[in-house]
Image (cartoon, rainbow, N blue to C red; front, side, top):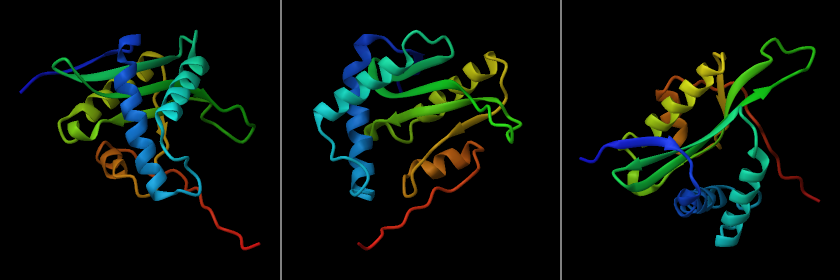
Length: 162
């Protein structure tokens, strides 16, 4: 079986990342079409451009990609997040803002390897807490739980009848 390779993002990874965004957006839209936009190639490109523009030039953000052999399998974006409210003790922590593994590579260790690399980056920044968001119904919820992540809060919604 080919080796899993985790490395930093290069522009040559864009096609694989666009496929990840499209797959994830498809799943999110199917679960919550009132919230998530219908996936299109344009949406995926705009999303990636927005992500790259938002994190450009920051040294406290990394994009890692996962490969199996020479095939693109997934990506993760991890950054240092800050809270400066007077009621918060934990002022800095690692935050996974994006993470996806292409369906054809699920169950092969790519997601776990990407998460491990993200955690190592956060530790290298002198931090010892990580956070991420995952939508209810997303199959990754069980995956994150197996890695030791616990529910911190719940975001709730209600449709109002007008």
